[in-house]
Length: 259
Image (tube, rainbow, N blue to C red; front, top):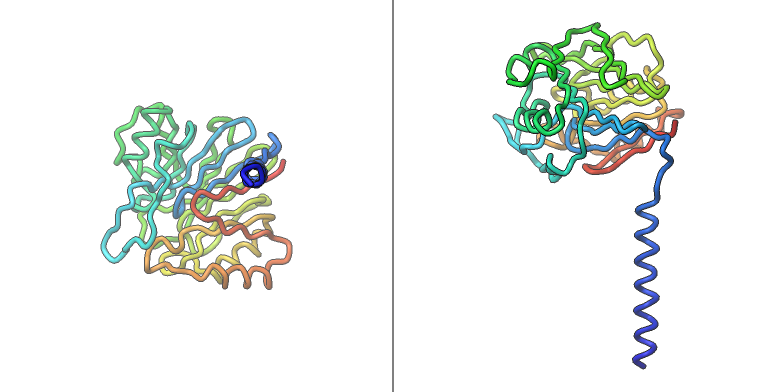
């Protein structure tokens, strides 16, 4: 009897190991990894290890009528080295000063943002890249173009076009419409929560106009004012977007794009 129990335990342990092996399956080195951290904060990792962090928001603070209904459970200290930080505008849920200072001090991260953001930071000049719409710069081998965004509550909102490894990623920031983009976008990270930005219908419209291969929603379900039915979004996308893969990422989820 004891030997039978021991054998069954051995089988169970092997099954657990097999499951763990599936979870830890390695992807090809020739990929771009996009990890959702929280809200509009994503960590983009290129095949050569260059990492870009968008709109950092780690402090779980609420303001005014924006009441958090979920928390960021990913501590900034757990992130690997961050080479570049992109900030779309000055609002608290996109501009976590403590997190930015932490990454600049730890990693000497380059901060790219409009002047109303950078003027609030006390960081070394060589880590500060103050930008304006239509600027094109190359940082850490990534070609970055600054695009306008429509977000009337913000002083100077922008989005970013990232070009590297023969792929173009569009990080829209807070917007409810598309700027003029002359290049083909492969991956689009777009707001979908409504009220202050595009809602799920405008998300679909933007993804359809872009004709991108991948579309990732952001800026939804963080606050009670921007709750969105993700299943409704998925169904609508299945109906309206035939050649675009919609990836609704939970916090901590990763999307791998083959090169």
